[in-house]
Picture 1: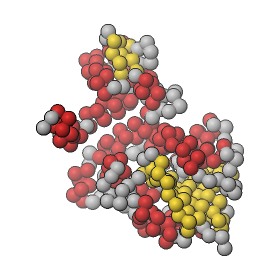
Picture 2: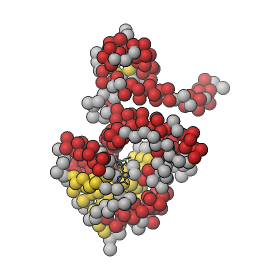
Picture 3: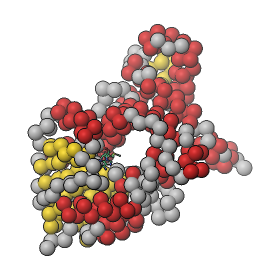
Picture 4: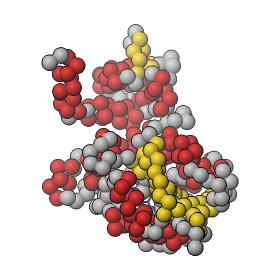
Amino acid sequence: MDRAERSKDLLWLRQSSSFFASRIILTANRFRVFDHLAAPGKTAPQLSRTLRTDARATELLLNSLVAIGLLIKRKDVFRNTAVASRYLVSQKAAYQGDILRHYSTLWDNWSGLDTVVKTGKPYRKAHDHEAFILGMHNLALLRVKKVLAALDLRGVRRVLDLGGGPGTYAMAFAKKSKETVLMDFPETLKIAKRLIDTAGLGRKISLFPGDFTRDDIGSGYDLVLISQIIHAYDDTACISMLKKCYRALNPGGKVVVQEFLLSETHTAPPWGALFAINMLVNTPGGRTYTPKEMTSWIRKAGFREISSRILDETVLITATKKLD
Ligand SMILES: C[S@@+](CC[C@H](N)C(=O)[O-])C[C@H]1O[C@@H](n2cnc3c(N)ncnc32)[C@H](O)[C@@H]1O
C-alpha cells in the first residue's frame, strides 16, 4: 500500500477526530480572533492581553489555526489568511461567523447523539435563535444570487417566502420589485426586520407572523418559496404544507422548494447524508429527502410541470398550479 492509498484507507480514522479542528474554529470564532488579526496582525501575548485569555492557551490555539489554514504566522506575528479575512471578519459581506455560532450550539445537541440513537428522540438542549437566524442569512447570502438567477419570474407579481427566516430571499425578490410577504415566527421576524430595515427595504416587504403548520398563510400569491424548511418536518407535515401552498397560490402560480441534495440511496453527497443526523438530533421527525420523495409529495399536493435543477449543494424543485 503506498502513502496515498494508506491515507485514503485511514480517512475514517481522521474523520473520527475531526471535531478537533471543528472545536478550534468555533472557539476562535467565539473569541472573535479573526476580527483582531487583520493585517498587520498580533503576537499571541498581544492577542491574549486584548482578549483577556490565558497566554499559553491562546498561543496553542493560534498555532493550530495556522495548521488549519486560517492564520499565517511570521516571526511570532499571527494574521488572517485571505480565506479567514473574507469569511470570518465580522464586517465582511461574506461573513460566516453567525452560522459558526449556531454550529457551536449544535455541538451541545450533537453531544447527545448516543442517547438519540438509543431512544429515537431529539436532544435539543441548546438553541440560540439569533445565531440560528443570522447564520441562515450568512449561508443564504452565498446562494441567493444563483437561486434568483435560476427562477423564471416573468408574470410573478406577489411572492410568499414561507419560513423565510432572516428574509435574505424576500429581500432579493423585493429588489426585483415583487410584492413580497415574509412569513415566520414572531421572534424570527424581529431579527429579520433589523436586516430588512438596514437594507432600506422595510416598505417593500410585509412581515407575516405565524406558524404555517397551524395558521392561515394568506392567498393570491404567484410564487411561494419553501427554502430549507422541508428537512425539519416529517412527510405528513410536508405534504400538508405543500397542499396549503397550493391553495394559497393563484392559478398558474409556482411553488419553489430548495433543499440539500440527497441521492436516492440516502447516502451521498456527504453533506446531505450527514445533515439528516442534524435533523435527527434537533427535530422530532425531520431528515433530508431525495428529489424523488419531494417530487412525489409535490404531485400529491396537486402541482404539475415539476422540474428540478441542481445548484451546488442544493436542489431547486419548481412546480405549477394548473390554470383552472
Ligand atoms: C432553516 S431556516 C431557513 C430560512 C430561509 N428560508 C432560508 O432558506 O434561508 C428555517 C426557517 O423556517 C422557520 N420555520 C420553521 N417552522 C416554521 C413554522 N411552522 N412556521 C413559521 N416558520 C417556521 C424558522 O423559524 C426558520 O426561520
